[in-house]
Length: 397
Image (cartoon, rainbow, N blue to C red; front, side, top):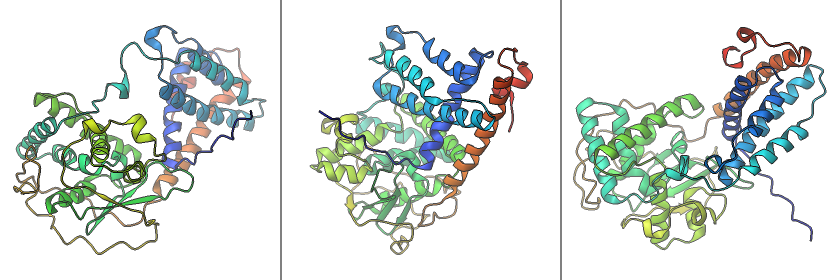
């Protein structure tokens, strides 16, 4: 029987840029470990030389991610070598790398990375973390603690990816979210109707969106996201609960929607998933959901970059007391006034193209650096490199 053709994924520019960043880390480590061989051979030796015991096993998802990272950086090195006049093919290298990674495929002895993430935080844990973050924000007047507090309130009810806060807009009761992951035929935006939400929650969503960095600046977003994650982790532990992560509340949102009776198609539309099976395979199940009265409603009408959105949100002004008690608010999340944030200008309705520009600039810079490195390796393969001039980590574009 013939195998059906493999579906071609349509990756966004930010996804491709992420592969370049991680692939560069693999290359830096390989060159540091094997400085006297060419970059491709260094990558192969680094992957093949990794331990193969149970402690070094890689989950299937980690194996796939490593393959994507290495495939991208190998293609960059090969293109640079070809421009330098060298005969270089990526297939033999990738075959050896893939074989080495597949030999390490399995279940790690201890959970690592995302496997350690809490996927079933309770309302009590979220409420305790919120109260602790609120106290820090009022005492130290720090926007990071204030944003983290708002995140613990908003995320279980909306379920966006953290990066999707960059460029999101709230117009009236309509929340427009740019999809961070795009598949063939999938629209760039998804819209949620928040008409069932209390005004204070809508105001919290609007302020959190305005506190997020502008789209097109991955470095600024990484700093902002890491600050939020660190504040949330410390606050949850200090409050006596488990160490919560940003994605813990996305698990809660999806589990809550399933518990509320949403169909797989509706959950995929609300979460921005490419497949209706994603929520059941990778996220917490209905048993971990919360008892929330408010529920978002997905809007199936596509939102294009040139589509006019509704009138500006006039339900709640920026200076509204977000922490005033509300009859519809959940008991663990009682509000008190947060400091007035120094927000960035309102996000525009259409997504920015700065991410694509950044990716092209970064791609050209990496190719130039790799080309110069490949020239040195191809022309003088047997001469030991001068550390000051050959070391990848010391070069500057």
